[in-house]
Image (tube, rainbow, N blue to C red; front, side, top):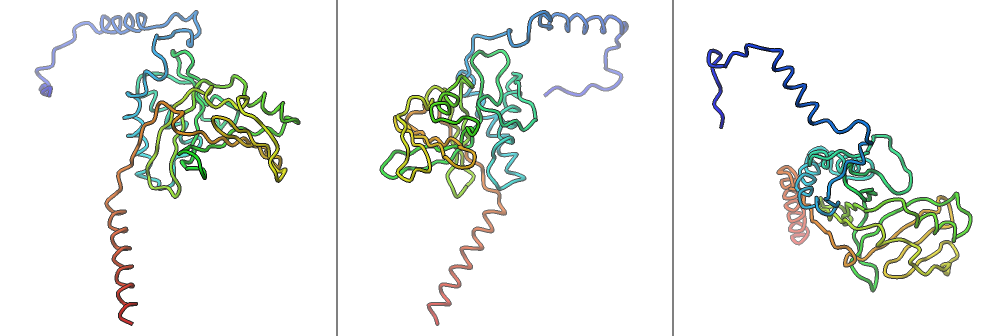
Length: 263
């Protein structure tokens, strides 16, 4: 550890203008050519290359979130946590706190090609007779009349990767971070038909999707986990007061059971 210097040991700077000039020169050297848009300055890294370094930062920020909240991290708050974690890693993103609900991209990483990210929450489940999967809600399609138009719109080039912060329900402060190319779940790959009830369209293939006919005509997708290469478990430590409350509840139930048996 660096020892603190006493006031009389601090070297005297004789020429303040020289220091100012030095800082100015450093700033000039670090400047990116102003004539170029900032997103044209790229690295050779791809988005998957930074995942291993990003996960510990995400874990720390998600733990900080749960120091205040017990509810799952969702929606725009998940977007901002991801944005801030990427900044902690030394990159800038295009994310802005506007609560936009546009289709596809929620943010992209400046300097990394093909880094348009769509942030999703998602629920982990196992469909009857199926594989362990993640299910999430997608965009609405009420502005498109026919099924063909809806599928063409939903399958457009809107993003490059999905970042799903998935969890089981009821929520137990465990997440599974799932990162995969959006090409994995393009709905134009599926075979579509009307459901037997006539209330929705169903798409079937290597994954499944549905589009309801009522209200928002929202897309729902269920993707098997074995289709996803990047999976990281994030476990939030249980606070001591939560442990105590769980223990108290267990003791109360045990006492009540004993009393019932005695009666």
